[in-house]
Image (tube, rainbow, N blue to C red; front, side, top):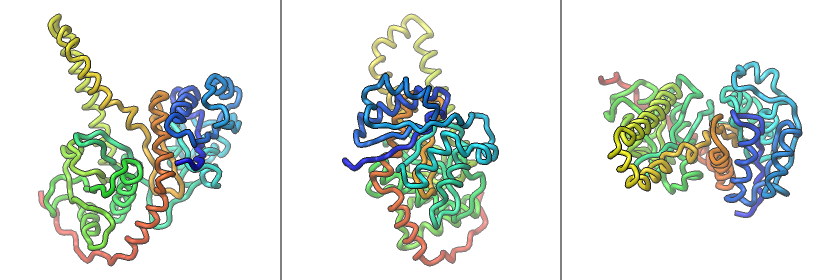
Length: 351
């Protein structure tokens, strides 16, 4: 792909901005030489850093602003007073067609509020969802929503399934991803009305999704499906539980190899294999949560990531653009609208 891709970067967002943002852009250029960056931020801080990276020469420009959104800013405050912030200007550049995607490691709530206001929602999508990739036994899976919507109805979950499936096709490169709804059991009567109503809709003939059915929490890491759909409350709890378990597991391994002299000798023999495990579980490889459902592409990088992690977040946004994510979403929305409504009535949940 050689067509130019314009990426808007909130250069002041994140714990280590602007250094990590600029270094991440230079790394991303190695994979995507057709990309050009617009850095939004304080020029006196950005220019000296950019000048130290010759690889960025001819691939970037700076849009100066003294304003940026702090990590503790409330979304409503950011929306009201942050019109000239680096985050808002980056999103505005996507909304007005100047840039193809925007990347920020800044305040998540502020980014969500500003993106909904500046970029707007896709017709046919009622709520945005936060989606991210997770490592599994089979490779990677996509999970959404991860916190944007605490409560969801059946139609919201159907829309999440549609968006997650297209995301898996465009970013993970899967020809026909499988989709599952996270539930408390695999039986048809399990779950609440929203879950059962969404499942009934996704089972209709003609739905452009390979719907697997329900999956349980222990099947997420197993890679039972390529796309895991749930409400934002459950999704965020599941994500944080998985992250905490991974940290606990890593701590157990470190403590075990440090427990005795023989264990330290054993570490020398296992070092290579442990390096592969560390690489497989490296959170930087999965950095880049996407705000799905918008008329444009906006990616949220983890605020504490390093340059490699930020480069991966840039890669997510670029992949979505060059693979036509938005057009595919619009096509599938049209196909879903043409389907008849499910006349299946949700039955009482079985415990």
